[in-house]
Length: 118
Length: 115
Image (tube, rainbow over all chains, first blue to last red; front, side, top):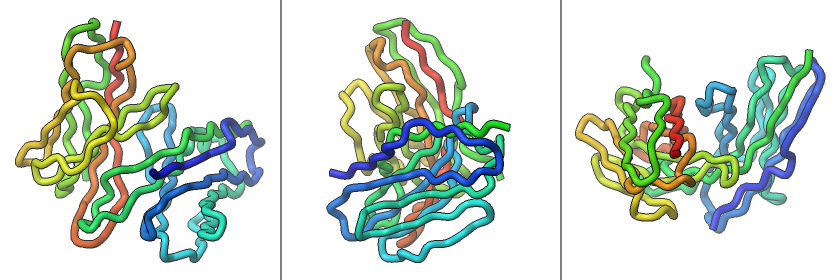
């Protein structure tokens, strides 16, 4: 069975600080996909990043960066120079790689509530 | 390009009633998935539909059902509502084309309250 653990439940930082959100996953699949989603108070889950299991290259996209390490089953997400608008709940998610290629069943972590204070 | 649209946004029902929620995916998206979000259990997968067929199902009782129409719009139904069914129900659509595992785009959800 798949499992995603987000050990941090709440993080509070001051604006412009960097913040790293941790994610540890478990799966028996050799091919899988990892995601980070953001949920603002409006309720909609907003897609942030995706990484597949055979590509451990870490990237930076604007103020976002991620660190994927298969050896430790971790997929951490960093926001650089945080802003008040980054305040939201952040979810890490895992999906199997269906033969159809569809992303149809996400297993989510419990989420991390990030508060960025001015 | 319009996003995923869920209707209604808010709903109050009485225990024992049934409810139908609607989801219109992004144009061109053929896969629609449903999730239940509660404070206690978090986000849990309900089911996924692709080309009008249920392709995957989560661990929920038979009171939860769904369907997908030829235009990819989907509905989910919950019969004999229980207080514990109070939740935010989120719909997600994805392209599901070829071998690409594409990201899911979510709607704003339907907030169901059972009293």
